[in-house]
Length: 150
Image 1 (spheres, rainbow, N blue to C red):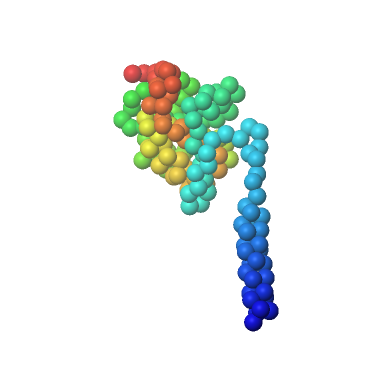
Image 2: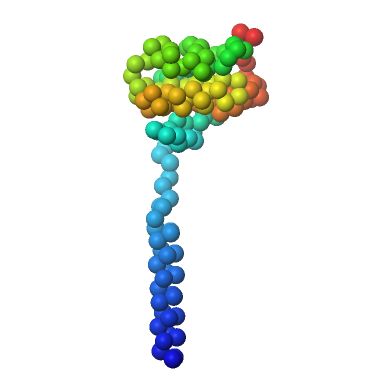
């Protein structure tokens, strides 16, 4: 009886050790690469990246993206806006965007809701480097930055 108890205890310890080891080893911590910005948002078919006002400002230092206001009705632009396309018509106006589906595109609206919808549509259309200004131009204004055209 004592041997059976020891065997059960040993099996229990082994199972506990294996499951704990599997948990810690199955998802290693990977440090983000330098220059990585934003928070990826996974959707069916890919992902887009939510960025903050501060991250957008840093991106403006070496602007290498198409900057699109998707808010309707028009309530103003953040400086350096390249074009305006209604969020719910983005698929009908893909010809106004770059035809390079790997090109960087940054979207914004008033609060971030419309631009996140437009970002999802662009990802579904095959665009691979899409960014959304989290909080939209409300966050931009809250940071003390101006909106043009009001």
